[in-house]
Amino acid sequence: MSAWRGVVRARWRQAAHWVIVVAAVAYLAWKVPGFVGDITHSGRTLENVRWHWVAVAAVCSLGALGLYGEMHRQLLLVGGARLTVRTVQGINIVENAVSSTIPVVGGAGALVYAIDQLRRRGVDAALASWSVLVAGLIDTLTLVALGALVLGWSGRIGFGAGVGFALLVVAFAVAGWALLTHPAVLRRGLHEVLALGSLLPGLCPPCRDAWRTRTEQAARRLSTRIALLRPHAPRWVLLILLAVGSWLLDYLALTATVAGVGASVPWPVLAVGFLIVQGSIALQIFPGGAGLAETGLLGVMLAAGVPAAPAAVSVLTYRAITWLGLSALGWGIYATWIHTSPIHLHRHAPELSHA
Image 1 (tube, rainbow, N blue to C red):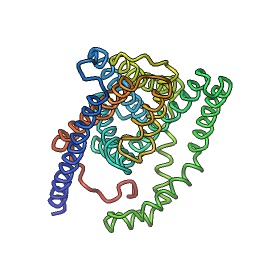
Image 2: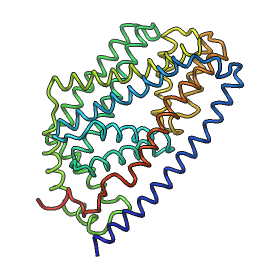
Image 3: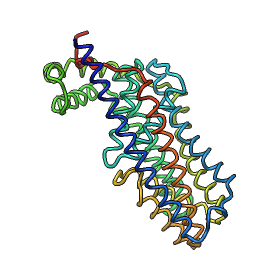
Image 4: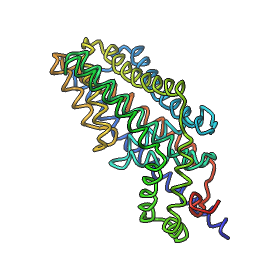
């Protein structure tokens, strides 16, 4: 009977997933005419675009997402999870789509989706959560450090200040890693998180009781598991190189888009605009930084003396590729996996059960 109820619950989840897909695709379809209309009204039609450069931008954008997915896969290998490249990349692309499309809670929803998909494929909860969160932290800290170096090199904040801030970020990352992976600190932190977990809505009564009564046991077990997830020096170098390469390809997508429009924009201007776009996305005020990202990048280009028409076309084309295009790809994979990904039947707080 319980197995039958689990299957029924899974089917209801599939129906809910289809509702999400339809809503997301409808939102993306609603945004496309606005982008095309703005390009047309800017004074330059799509006939003026050099499409080979746009294709280069699309390849760079997809490559940037692919390098991030490979970084995630390398983190999974640290814990012994050997998923195929195709599987990890699929999860990564969908995670990006969820984060870029769903308002406000898209970032959190993307993390939950990625962890759930990894668990469906046999990855334990500790490794799944650790790999998703650490990948995001490495990516974010790498961007902050690179941004400081770029701003210093371009003279925006002074070269010394840029290098100093980048080194400060590195020192903070190293010290934070040493502190958070200390057994006592890690166990205490997990205990507090698990205690809060008992307050989450939607838990079944057995799971809620397990959360409340065995949090210390679970914190000890999880901290022991996570403490084993320590990449060696060569893998750390690979992880950082993948993160740097991902951001570099994303920036090259912007430069290729500008080249496709035929605009002449100094690299420091594009670098500042790129950082503004990424900051707008990180704020999660609107899905994918919609509105804020375009306005910020366009404002920087106009302030640098770039004519309005090529600036507007560059911004809209870049965002159409990196936001709408990649999101549409992700939701396509999401829809495919609704009926093909492994069914993960509910189990009562597996991390909290007795060994």
